[in-house]
Length: 425
Ligand code: GLY
Image 1 (cartoon, rainbow, N blue to C red):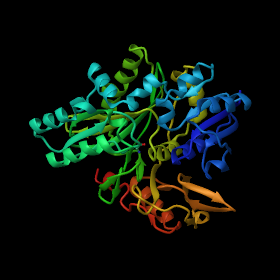
Image 2: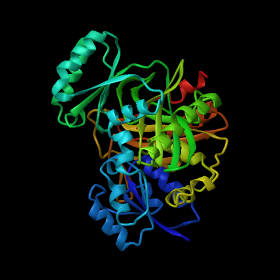
Image 3: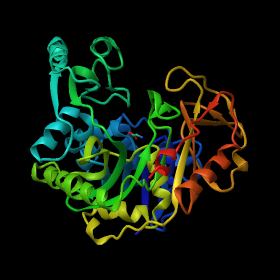
């Protein structure tokens, strides 16, 4: 059978998903909503609002879509998978009860506690009790401390204050900021974990699971992991910090009990499970779960995958994941994000991008771009992802930065130390 696929989302992650799906012999037609100029080269971009479930369903019906693949977290946490499953339409992405592993930090912490999954110890406070939260942090007198808004906050809901004064500023911001107030209706206070961060991804049909790669992201805007948090400024895969022994522990101590725990609790987890980890001296611990692929981690994992992604997605939809072997090539991939100067704060859009045609030995994934009159312009904070390869990390980094140099737009910014952490191992 060949499949009509609808892919939802518009970032670099969705361009990487579109590329993998478009290479499948099982594909009939690929539609991407809303997509970006990169995905337009691989399928048909369609201008529908992915937060309007009725509009999505109307499109699915009219275009005889066989399966819908959801890229970002918001529609999943809003219940899109439940909505489409109720119409008997196969969806790749967890139902909202399972997506709550990302949608509520408190839910995730309570779940991990119930299933003995290693993570930092925590306390939760409602927004009305932020004075009690402040007193708790004062009495505990251990800095830095990690403060997390319970709900989705677009990557802006985590703070690591280093003093009581900084804690008070964060609490004030969470109470008053228009964009954070709702997500911070509850606050999770966690111990600060010491170690190196890495991400391990699993795919599940709700019953069985397979590990589909690991990567290391670079969340801060500045060189040497300094400055404000971003959606991710670059990544590489595989990450040497995830040794075979660490991976074995992640599987036994984290992934297996997460998938079996969700199933036992009546909320089987079907889709991509993103385990954001801290590799501590005691072993791997969960920093956060996400209910989707990472961006830019997806851009370095999928190009390494030799197995047909659409075959895997279809196997998940049929609850037959156990029958598929997922294979990867031996190359290392490195991704450098090209951003608009000023991101993650104020930045300008509409700058013409030149030099893309000169890139020969790397994959270009579009994110915040738009096409007009045959030219490509910047249209977001994270603009492009340049993904290069090598037989080892050092070579992958070198090859990627050689291609990065070909691209230009006014106020272009990128980190020049993507992957450097991995070379220390
Ligand atoms: N790169 C981090 C994320 O996708 O959440």
